[in-house]
Amino acid sequence: MRDTIGTRSAPLENYPVAPQYSSSRPIESGGAWLWFAQRFTGIALLLLLGLHVWAGHFANMAAVKAGSLPDLVAFSNVETRLQALGFIVLDFALLAVVLWHGLNGMRTVITDFGITGGGRTTVSVILWIIGVAAFVYGANTLLVFITGSGFF
Image (tube, rainbow, N blue to C red; front, top):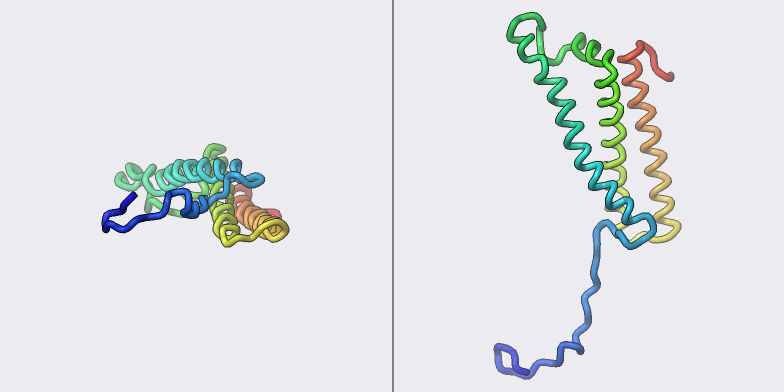
């Protein structure tokens, strides 16, 4: 067999096979589920964020143009919106999805550096602790808007 230059090349089986890498490691323990969850939360994030932006910035456009509301984003608007169950669910869901998607993405990037075994578990536990703490803090902030008082 000759290549384009005219010299004889080695048979194909003599060349090493390049390793196949995947950034989300779906073969490893929990990897396929985490890979799917990252894609699902990405789509959910787009939908929830779109609803949140629409509700917060564009839903009251007619009232602002008519003069019955002073501004699109006003404290009174947020307060009124957070009395409706749908918006409460939307905001809590957005908080949870943003945290999951962001922290799972960080976990993927960190573990792609070759961390295995106990190191991978340590990274996961630390990110879970950060996620739970951030969710409690965010939920407390939402509860202050909803009820007037939070957890602490």
